Image (cartoon, rainbow, N blue to C red; front, side, top):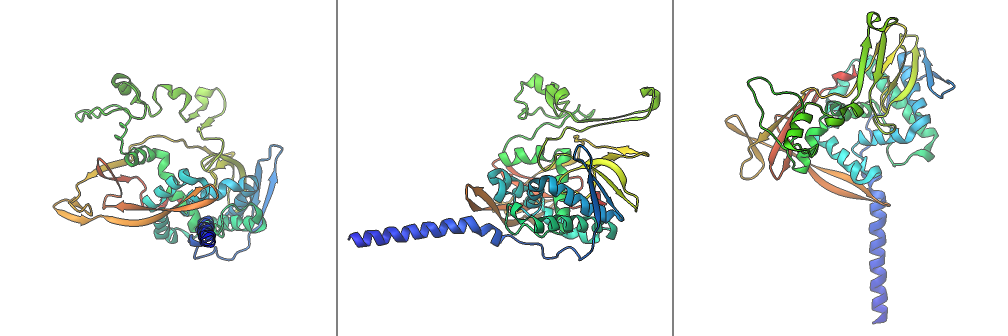
Length: 383
């Protein structure tokens, strides 16, 4: 009897150990890797840092500079760049746990990878050359610093991976999260900001985002940042000489976090093909998003244009078809696996993502809601 007890205990311990090892190691083995490596090419970039550590990146061609941007940024913050690449692969949950898995869900919901696969090959060759050079810079740094890699099978990457990151993150700069978050939670959609269009009054809705009274909710609805907008809002101003009393002044004051995937990274770029400006980019970009030189300056900021529409769908009894006009159409459904890190193990969590002719669909206790947004299934912003 005692021998049976110990044999059974040993078998259970072995099963637990095997399960633990499987959960600790499955994700890199299961994860899809890039099918196509960046084309073989030689790049040459010179990186000179000023007294503040800001990289000044020089190259003969624009693509040489893009390669140098990846190397310089990797030298300074390779960890965040890996996070961004993991997001562009639907693998961020394997690094950041439940919070990362939420990003991976949106990655699948928006079909960021599919958008890149459909449109990246048709982009102009010179634009793709920048993305391939940038990807090569990331790969070269990863190859030379393998001890810094925090997720297996993350490298090598290619230009399509970089483009997929843009397809995922770009819509959130005009507030797509303000639609996705309440729909996933089953809450009321937040009231759109600004006054009613004359002749088209809107029904009052609970101000879930502010937790405010009805009267205060109406007041704060005119600003996406509520009553404390002065402390929260990004801003940008161009002041002409007639107003400044001197030179033209560009105030670039976008409020971004100090760290993470949308934190500014300062750099200066110059190539013999024409690049010559000081500015900043986000992790995962081969070029600055704002900057200036002796001839021009430009900036950007997060704002809330009306670029998202939501449609409530009528589903049939099976929940697999929706009414469109006078017909019923099949609701497109895909099974996806979200990796969720919990301590030393990564759990595979299955989820469904849906799509209609309108766009991505989220189903909650209140019904099925499709949404459509500006720039959906489009990579034109990269060119």
